[in-house]
Image (cartoon, rainbow, N blue to C red; front, side, top):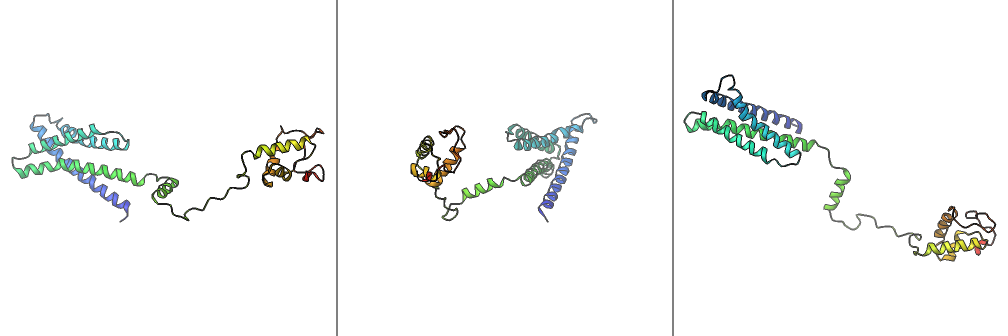
Amino acid sequence: MTGRWTYRTSAAGVVVLAAAAFTLSYDALHQLALDSRVRPALAWLWPVVIDGTIVVALLTVLAAKRAAVRAGYPWALAGLFSAASVAFNIAHAPDRPVAQLVFAMAPVALVLTTHLLMQQVGWRRATSGPTAPVAEQQASSQAAQPHRPGDHPAPEPPSPDQAAPAGARARVRAAYEAQIQAGQTPTGAGLARAAGVSERYGQRLLAEFTTDPTRPLHPNGNRPAEGHPAHPDAEGR
């Protein structure tokens, strides 16, 4: 039997038992109301008020639990009317211990089966609710397991550009502007030699400077072409 059918079968059984317990308690309370001279047309309301309040209070407890709020008052109400139902059933029973126990079992069974049904509803919602995100589950599992060498690849060493000193950019910029003012066309290799940085870093900054609209102009009024020297020996300057 699958889990779904197990839940449905047990829930149906609980409902049947709760209905049977309510019927037995209803009959005893109805007779007690008639014996207490409640009008016959209204006597049926007396067991509904007593046992119905128990069911409603327990359902309110379930709603409060789902809303994550305190349920002190519903619990107190359910306990008070449960005790009253048991007491009234015993009062209606014949003056024999066994008979009083028989009549007391119906309201007790009503309370217990209703509470059991509430628990089944809560379990059903918990198992059929949305699962946690995959990333959250992985994070929790990683936190629970100690890290061992080899679990994660070693971090890559920084590239020459990332390892460049903090003032390297300023030196490359100064060399770039000096070559522009001298009428030369800067190159990445030339800037790298002048600033003492890697050629790759010098080429990247050269591309950045030459695309900057605020970069210095060539003395002839034109901006130098990116990456192309103006003279054959410009690379060595």
